[in-house]
Length: 401
Image (cartoon, rainbow, N blue to C red; front, side, top):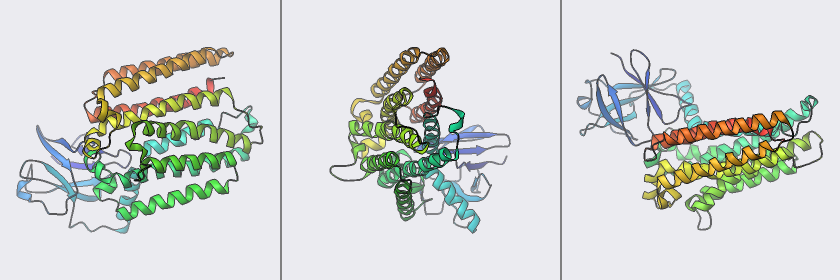
């Protein structure tokens, strides 16, 4: 039976064991996991390893097991240590072509940029940019130019945020997220610095070139918060201060993007800059939602944060207390959204908003009950589920009128 380990560019932190039929997905957020070989289980961990493995200690045979990407190009080998752990390491005798090297770097960049966060930024900006519309005629070249002007700097700023955080947190990620490209060696620190610097320049340059004051102010505030959140400095590194970390998430996803994009599109369409009920609700709800995402994001990372003195809410008060508190806050926010939606003078908006937010709140509570707070994979999956609810919210905000 042939077995192949595969890595997908869009599923960072996952390895796939390919058997004769189908795939077995293995989450590798944890340093230690298990791999199935026939009817047996073998523990493994993801590490950076420069030494050759002893093929006589391989867990199934004397041959090394190839690791392949989605294009089935041989990248790595698997062997076993004396204590039975399977180690993933680069294959020394693999002769890389420039095409395969470029593909590997692109895959690494995709993981580096945190696709789920970038997609959320794209969805959010696209949704909020439609809030100033009053008629179909607003779909004009001016709108699409304005949308592009907002999308480029904020998307660059989003990836910059993920990148600079990984650059600073390499030691912590060796414990919490060993699959990230800077830790695994797929990207060097020099390459990481170059990417982050290029994104910072592009972000600021395109915001200035837009000649839009609301957009420029929004991008500058976003860039400032993203920087002070991660950068090592006695007065900065807000991520180590739980309350400031929650404020940073709220500022990035809630207080900044919504009003900046809304006023920018109004300006691009030549409309008077008026703060509408819909954008007011979007800013209020998404600020609370983002503030809760921060503590939940830290729940799976307790081991590394505690080891490096990063006193997050989960380290201070315990994972279960933080999880339950965050879920309760989200349920209250959805309750407020139901009340606000019910007050709409438009019947369709009233029905859609009330039913929609009630449904999302129910899904949230059901998923929370099935989440194992002490299991990093389970809490990480819950965190990703919250982004799916967030996508749905970007639809519902259009029914708050």
